[in-house]
Length: 118
Image 1 (cartoon, helix red, strand yellow):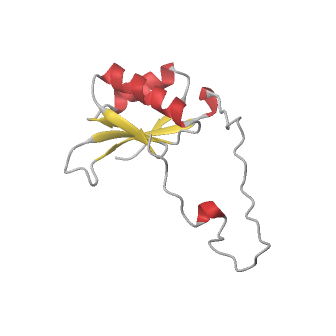
Image 2 (spheres, helix red, strand yellow; image 1 turned 45 degrees about the vertical axis):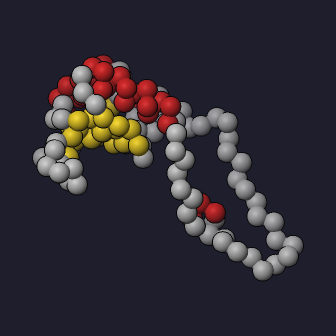
Image 3 (tube, one colour; image 1 turned 90 degrees about the vertical axis):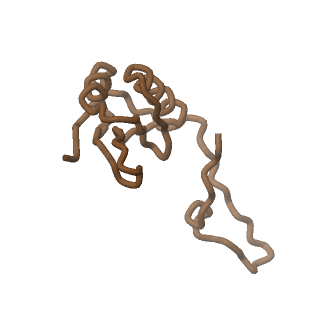
């Protein structure tokens, strides 16, 4: 999987130091990531057409958890809807307008889900 590009804010704002004794302290990533139970996750389900050539997609936002869990949830939703899609940047994209079906599926999994948008 492609790693996210590092930005200035990822480095703590320090790009270069002229101090010869400066040692950049890297924050160690904890092996235990934030685990939020399904019933405490507040997900939003909406339909989106922006920057997609007029094609409608169902967008699920607000997921908190690891990338593996996001991918697993996305795969389950894509399989149940019988369509393609993707999961990136903490969002799940399902091709087509499946808001009602996705809403029901996520509620069955125990997530707090709201329909948003028009």
